[in-house]
Length: 552
Image (cartoon, rainbow, N blue to C red; front, side, top):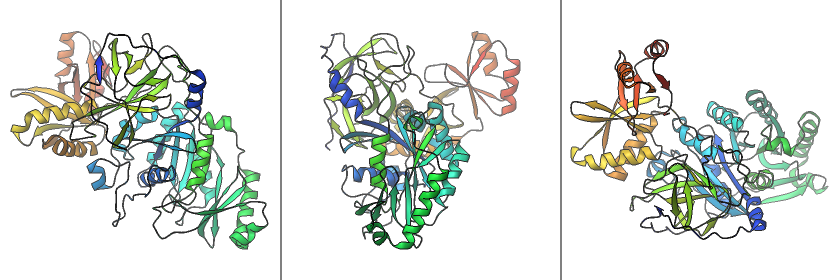
């Protein structure tokens, strides 16, 4: 892919109506049917970044899979494009990876695994039509997995489960399935089953296709696709191919699954009540291709989205979409700002004019792009389910709805109240301009929130974050992307509340004991409480004002 040049003004107000191209409904339906837009949810260290890399490998998007942690790795994982991610071996920002495989158009929304970046992850899950839940075969369901599963369950998102690291000794597969059902309250169907020879992971049995995949080990540490031999479960040659002991163990497992396990019900999968479970090893590539093929067949295409005017069907004639992420400095050389837009309905065309619902003004979307992490390619069109990037000069915000012909807003974009606060100060006073610009742009993309406290020396910026690691990321990016190194001085305040009501009462409440009055970027009054006792006291006794956990 080649870097697309940044246009001079790619998101601009324009009052000239755009010529509408008649919608080709047959093509619209075909394009919708072949789209798969999904995210991967997991606990840290379950192998999410490695799995992402292997999906790209099998999809032909890359030819050599990178390793996140291997000391002798020759390259970094494609999805971890930020310099900090490459240095620490962690994912701290969402990225979009788009590629084709077997005639399907895949939009893989890669998300941060660390809980300190929950807000970014939750917003990205809103843009996905399905999710892959990745489990470590030794640990099963872990806390972070449970949190993200609850988000998917709330949205009734179809979930496909992949038990990873089967090349290592782990829990009994049947116990893992039982633990998932007991812990998460979702029924499981074993879509593939691990094949072991002398306790060594050698293949998988595909229950839906009734065939066994026996894999051949390679010496390249999983950098290339795994070769396999496929034998039907009823083929007499299977015993010779896998060995008598492995065959007997597999037959016993199949008999147990058929007798005691849940039956496959596609409608229950789409409703989020049943999860197909696959087994594999992202490190060795064993079981990854069978999983990917069946996931593409079973996962749902783009469906209707809830909005303030009711469900919006993807087959609707007019284009609609919503912004779920904004990323600054994907190309530091150009100081760019990209708004990630999920297409909900209709046919998107480059240079089309759309209605910006929040402002009521028309916007022309020029030079749209699709992504392979940081790399981009210019596109001329997009369809429901696709994620496109548009260059933004500050007009767009997370949650904005674009398109449609009336007042409508797509719903479900979550907002979070910060839990940690720190005073932000430029390390070099001569870099104040770059520091202020960096703070503004990073908060607009959702990296953190900035508030301002009035002091004798003027406005003092205070950064609010959901997790402590966000301060490290912000400091890193301010220094390396804006040449504005900074210092963060942590504060004891942890409970923010936006306050509305009569001006005099708001002023009185905001300046009480154990409270700090600050303003958000819109000038709204926010009170930071020093402890829960002070917060509870205010909620009980201050009845002339209203308290809000997020900006009203």
